[in-house]
Length: 274
Image 1 (tube, rainbow, N blue to C red):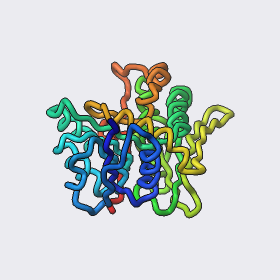
Image 2: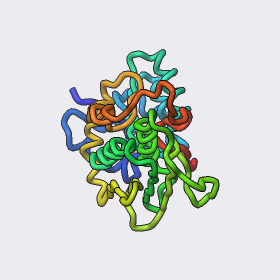
Image 3: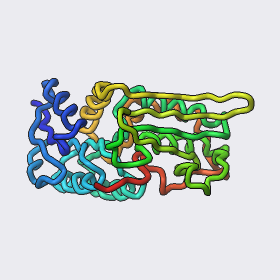
Image 4: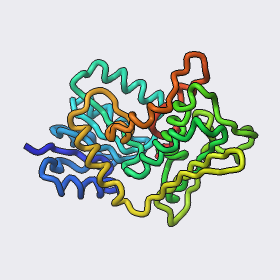
């Protein structure tokens, strides 16, 4: 029997992509298509909700779905550490329900983030430059925040990165001590550079999304994982079992610096509410 999927944000670019993927696989079927301002009871009866709406609506979508006992796959930015913590408390009382939150469905992007976390303990000077289309509502991007968080965790036994003059606004927004610089430009899909400065050398780990088709494999993985999820899962890296790579250079910080807990989110540290 196929899984009935309700898509919230169905008219958007990601919503249309999710619809095509669901239509193309026998194990899933589209049950309902909702806009960000539609009545949420239209999802009643679905087996799974996919939220690709807007930051201002996402919390309500997830809360309502959980109240109906429906699992959720979240592809919307704006899920701060506080939001995820509250979600974990909510799901603690709902042991048969789960939410999967994915900042970026691109396999290449999540691998670049993992590689950046691996390199982080070897360089003290690290900054992130990310670029998206002019219509993206939130900054920094969820992917950049996730990357900075994992860099912070990888450096837990080493200390914060060296980021001079962060009191100046042009130096970007710091997440887990890593400065993030956001560009919003017409003609751009998505691009992220993680730049590591060392003695006599610079290393750049770069990923660029050229087409939304790069999200298809990740969306399918997310759908399969969210269908049977329990509790909260954050990041495509968890679905790909990339923890085995990240754990190799994450030192337990018994007495060292650890990233500030309020920024550990896997999604955007700050969102522009639509």
